[in-house]
Length: 282
Ligand code: NDP
Image (cartoon, rainbow, N blue to C red; front, side):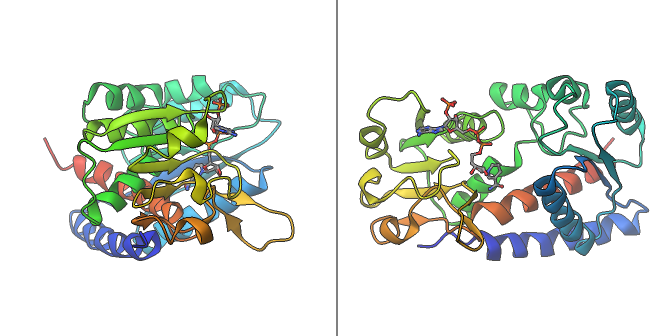
């Protein structure tokens, strides 16, 4: 089974457009503001795509480009201002910020109510404690793909390879929340292949093109590939999983492109709409 994030993402965004239209009837236009390093071409491309999809469903937003001349004081004042602005429902600090700026401090400053990317310490703490709050968009997209295809995690052995704060760790916590038995692997893990071969659900979140071939996968496993890698001489992005060799033995697998990627942006926009709707509640 192919876990098609492109199709599911499109369907969810259609539902979001309906919700945005209903908000519009009550005078609310969801707004996502993005602070982005203008000199980072990948960030600029990602943000342009997010902006385009946001516009398609009726989410407005302003971009705040920053560069080597941006001071920390300016950044922190902007975050405070956006936190306090009732017309702004979500704030995205597109990673990575320019190196001279303290990104963890900026994330700390971001109000949990507007952290629609779910990567501030407050949001991650809420995930850790099971409290309500915005969840990280990429692992949330993976969970949505599992739910949509009725893939039950309870009692399954989930192996997550990668322990980044935005991806591996929150993915592991979300699988734990769904009652999987979770193993987290990283670059110092011994016998990585042997551990991966025990997985009923394998999450590849490493950033190495096609590292996981069929020798890492137990027949019948569910394989979620978060990787997006550029390979010289090849067009487009390549996943962490060698799709050709793994697809025949996996019970379900996300393709790259068209799997986890489109779900990430969709979940971000879904969080923005949730944030705007929460204004209607007392
Ligand atoms: P990071 O570089 O922050 O983390 C990579 C992780 O992989 C680290 O924990 C590292 O271990 C581990 N790792 C690296 N090499 C190996 C190895 N040989 N064996 C086992 N573990 C290894 O990356 P991100 O989490 O930010 O991103 C991972 C991938 O996901 C990238 O391809 C990125 O482009 C993609 N991505 C996709 C998104 C989407 O929307 N689909 C969103 C975000 C990222 P250690 O901690 O020991 O260094």
